[in-house]
Each structure stands twice: as structure tokens, then as C-alpha cells.
Amino acid sequence: MKARLILAAIIIPLGMIIAAVPENTTKQFRLTANELLEEVKDGTQFLQPDEVADMLIQKDPTLQLIDVRDADQYEKFSLPNSINIPLVDILNPEWKEYINQDVKLNVFYSNGTKNANEAWMITRQLGFENNYVMLGGLNYWVETIMNPEKPASTSPDEEIAKYNFRKGAGAALGGAAVNTQPSTMKKSSKPPISKRKKKKKVQGGC
Amino acid sequence: MGPLVVNEIITENANLFLAFLIGIGFGFVLEVNGFSSSRRLAGMFYGYDTTVLKVFFTGAIVAAVGLLFMSLFNWIDLSYIYINPTYLWSSLGGGVIMGAGFILGGYCPGTSVCAASIGKLDAMAFLGGIVIGIFIFIEGFPMWEGFYNAKFLGSPLLSDIFGTSRGLITFLIILVALGMFWVGEWAEKHFARDDYKLNQK
Image (cartoon, each protein chain N blue to C red):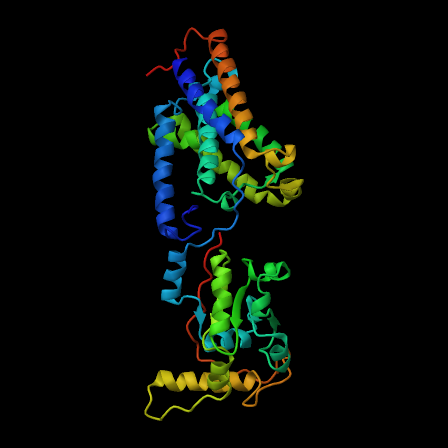
């Protein structure tokens, strides 16, 4: 009897407070500057071009490449199956369903690392997940995947395996010449894939 | 901040460990409330002991108010909380079957484990019945698959159905719960039994 009165005396006022205050509708969990700094320091957002190439060749359905350069440059050259979201346009609500989702693994790329990384910082600061940056951008891509440099024969096996993978990937993804016909993957034979480390684990999600 | 495991504040394994500790706490609360006594549980249906109603509804309203306050303080993102989806007909059918088993056997699944762990033979028999029931359900699944999946409603919330805030619904449920406690204690006096003493040790 008494316990019920104590319970009522505590829970009814709390219930009245919670009924009176407006609901907390902040859905996304924004990162504080410190949390963002920690992530920037760790560089967890970066994917090596080799990892991206591997996913492209495997036709990994979770991969979504996003070109953050302007439309002109995208028209001239882009990676297979990429979409174009210019950096200046990234906050346009039209793109929100692409950059704030938990199904695909988005990889931003630009000519270098800078613009793609800026796109990542903006989206990450908003609390969006599953966005990554291709390290080195297209310049590094062309250098390593399209025109890999043959390592010296005295190089460690890993280097040679990496070179073989890149040579094969380059052939599969358009050869040494830069492909000006994007979004059509050449159906050439698969390269000899030396199994590389698994792609990064997608963070978050239930 | 929360849920802790979704935001990777704790690992999956730490999460399971916390669940283990909370499970022990749950079992402890069941036991100290005398829920390992089948007479106490069956008393709910005959009205001479409504402890079950009081304990579980107290738990529910405290948790509801707690979650809403934690959401208010930004300690937890409620959109990440898993809500068991509703399949209307199987919920109703399951409720009837479980309720019947509850009266007949004197336990619900959790309390039967609780009572079996302190060595009650009827609870162990009840656990055996659960296993047989699970076996029949699984083996006969094709027969009731349609019923099982019928009338899927997603995860509806009372606040969405009535178009009000969660806080207001919670407040109303608190009032309803306290009203039920009052009715329950009235029933305990009205249906009291000579051979049953409330809160016996």
C-alpha cells in the first residue's frame, strides 16, 4: 500500500514532465569536433586504390563510387559505375539519400585526396556513416592501377604480388590508356587476384 | 551516446557480457519477488495475488520514463532501439496459448527457469513442456507459417496511432498502470484465500 503511494509520488510527476516537454527529435548523432579530430588522426576514412579496384573487379554490389569533381571533369573521365556529386553541391537535399544511408559503402574520389576528403569531413560531421575516401584520388589511381611501376626484382614478394594485382586490375579496368568511356566496365578476363586483405568493416549499423 | 554497442562505445562482446549481468539481475528480481512460486503466478488469474501485474508494470513504466528522459538528455538515440515487429494474428494466438499455459502450469517461460534453478520439480516439468512445444512448433511450421506471418503491421507505436507525443502516451500509461495496481490490491482483498498468505516467505 505504502510502496504504491511512493511509486505514484515519484512516477506521476516524472510522467507529467515528460508529457510536457517537446520530444527530442535529433535523429542523427553529430560528431563533436574532438571526435572528428580523432577520426582524422586515425585516417580510418581512407581506402587504398587497390581495395577500390578489387571491389570494382569483384563487382561488389555494396560499392558506390562518388565523383566529387565538377560535371565537366566527370564527363571526361570517371571510374566505372560512379555517380557525380560535385563538392559544392554536396548539401543539396537531392543527394541526401546517397550520402546518408546504411546499405552501401560510399567512396568519394577527386583528382587528389583533398576534395574527396572535404566531402567526407562534411558528411561525417553531419553524423553520416559508410562514407570513405579513395586515398590519392584519380592521380594516384592512374599512377598505381593504370600504369603500375614494375618493382625491382629484388623487391619483397608482397611488392611483386601488389604489382601483379595492379597490372591485372589495370587491364580489367581499362588498360594503360585512360578510358574516356566511363560506366562501361570492360569484360576482359579477370586479373590474377592475389587475395588482398578484406575490405574495411563497415562501421555502425545494428 | 547510446545505444552503446551501435555507436561502438563498447564492443559486441562487452555488450553480451552486460546482457549477461542484466539477465542475472532479472532472474534475481524474479526470485526476490517470489515469482518462482507457481501459486503466486497463478494468483494473478484468480485475483488473490497481483504481484506479477505490479512488478511488471512498474518495470515497464520506469523503463519508459527512463528512456524518454535519456532521449531528452541526448544520452540515447531512440531511433536505434529495436522494437519487436507486430504480426497481429500470431501475437494474439501466441498470447492465448501462453496465457493458457501460464494458468495450467503456473509459470511463464522466464519464471520457470528461475524456479527450476532453485530445484522445483514442477518448473522442470514445465521446462520440458516448453521444449516439446518448441519442437512441435518447428516441425509443424509449414502448417502455421501463413498464420505466423499474417497481418504484419511493422513496429507500430501507440503515439503514432493516436498522433500524440510519446511522453503523453507514457503519462497516460502510468495513470492506467497505477489504476490497475489499485484494482489489483482491491482484488487481493476481495478474492483472498484462507490457505494463501500474501508475501509469505
